[in-house]
Length: 84
Image (cartoon, rainbow, N blue to C red; front, side, top):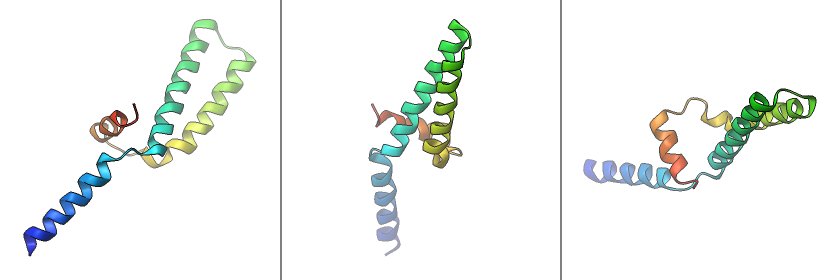
């Protein structure tokens, strides 16, 4: 009986980790866009348009990534593999 319960829990955990998390993938995408925009500001110098775009991306990232703020590095890398 105990083995069956442990096996069921293991299957549940593994199946929930193996699927593609669309919200997480959106978080990764917006984070990459934010990094690119930050690099653009560093190389070209700041201007009003870039600052506005950066501000919008920061707000979007805060919304998209709020559920993943406390996620561990290993789990994040595993989830990121499913986004590509």
